[in-house]
Length: 46
Image (spheres, rainbow, N blue to C red):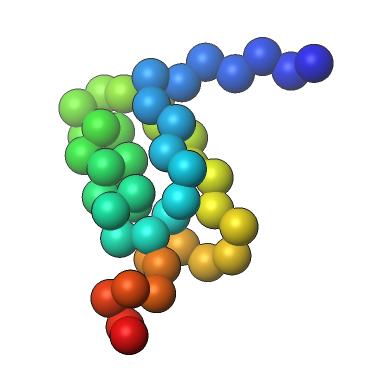
C-alpha cells in the first residue's frame, strides 16, 4: 500500500474545494484533491 503525506486532502474539486486547496497551498501546506469528474464543479454555472 502506498503512503501519502498531506496536510490537507480535499474531497471534491468544486469551487469551495479548489479554493480551500489553493489557500492552504499558498500557506505552504501539502495538498491533495480528489475529484471524480472535472475541477471547478457545476454549482457556479447553474
